[in-house]
Image 1 (cartoon, rainbow, N blue to C red):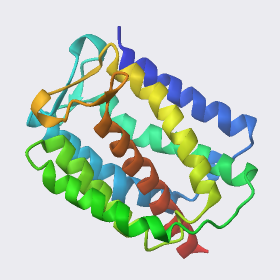
Image 2: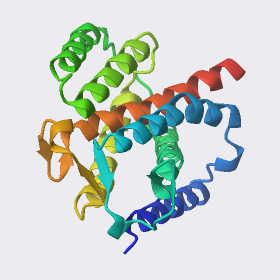
Image 3: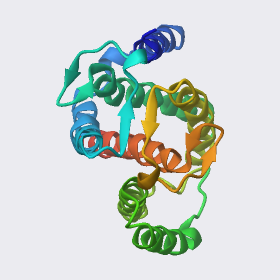
Length: 221
């Protein structure tokens, strides 16, 4: 059964449904922001995915994919980096529309988290996936901390929905499993069927995409 393709079909239907139900005018979103998100965030993640798959950090179960591949990746995996960020961008817009904005000073957490992530990457250098994802999280935290992106009650609310939706969707991919991981590439800690590293991966991918979109949006305004 092509579980991955069905998952992406569900994502597409969610995009269309949310767009029309909430009158979000998705197709009138600033294309410059979308291109920035895809170019600055999605593309590097795809390149990372190609290299990691080639080096055996993770693999895709042939039983649950359609078959066609591009640069060694299932076509579904490449579509993932375009569809999922757009869905979460819609969720971000819904949070912005429905949650009253309040400033929250997160500067006290900035340096401790940055130091923790940095040393976590150094201590896990022998585990490729863990090392790369913590290094990516360190870079994102450093960049995002220089903006007002995280100093927001909306940001906190969005993280709740991000984690909840990620847990549901990634369980669908790691339970059958559609994606398998090499033991030496990860620490082995899991929440349910999801490697702990995937939570950082998702955090950087989605928040990085939204930050890139917002920065472009502000530049255009």
